[in-house]
Amino acid sequence: MAMGLINANPIIHEKKERRIRQAPETTDENAVESIDQLEIFDHIRDIKDPEHPYSLEQLNVVTEDSIELNDESNHVRVIFTPTVEHCSMATIIGLCIRVKLVRSLPPYYKVDIRVAPGSHATEAAVNKQLNDKERVAAALENPNLLDMVEECLSPTFD
Image 1 (cartoon, one colour):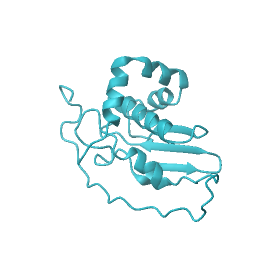
Image 2 (cartoon, one colour):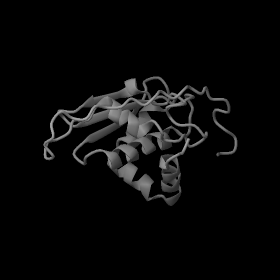
Image 3 (cartoon, one colour):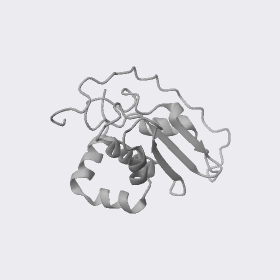
Image 4 (cartoon, helix red, strand yellow):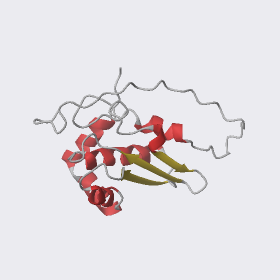
């Protein structure tokens, strides 16, 4: 945990019960399986906050409703809400969401990560960083940032 917390007393929300998805109706192994909003949420809900010992779901940084999915055009947009408008960890949080989805989704999906409108003091700059391939690649080449991302993505056993 960081010294001098940005948000020393975040509001903690209850985790939603995981819903079980139905098996696909088709048994064709070669058929393309569609992806839904719940599946995207399940991939990112347990990402740990870089500053607190809580998940992004518990801090209400991501919700199922904050995910936009167009399965036909293979496009996913996640809109996340930092806990405070001056959160210096917003870029790290967005980077964690991006890395998790890129690792989890088929490679032909376009992933778009955005800060919720009006939720961050430098919203435009954060959005630009998170959706610029060169900036994301450069960030992930930084061993300290990569370690932080990997720590946030590591599984918890609660």
